[in-house]
Image (cartoon, rainbow, N blue to C red; front, top):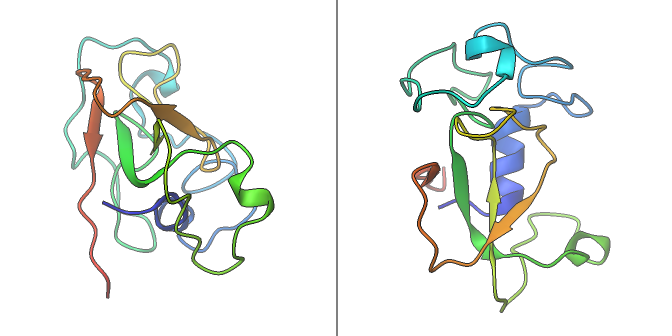
Length: 130
């Protein structure tokens, strides 16, 4: 799984300062213009890949991240490639969900959940170093 920082970099795909992956507005291909809840998740391949070749990031399901969540972590974290806190109670997650009122989230939006919880709108993205 990617760290939060890796996830956000993949979501932004070189477009720093933009609210959503792909730009300043909800992408046109997002079902129902990002308004939910929907009956279920949409196909993973829906929508074009971003500049890094990543599809569907920040929408459809919440994605677990490798790091623990700490509210103030980024205020004092390393500037380059922060790895998250060493310990915690809740794991970081990113992205929107098909079962929420808004199915897409801003690239910078952070979320957290106890890792023992299981929901139909949580998943993970496989990542590898390149």
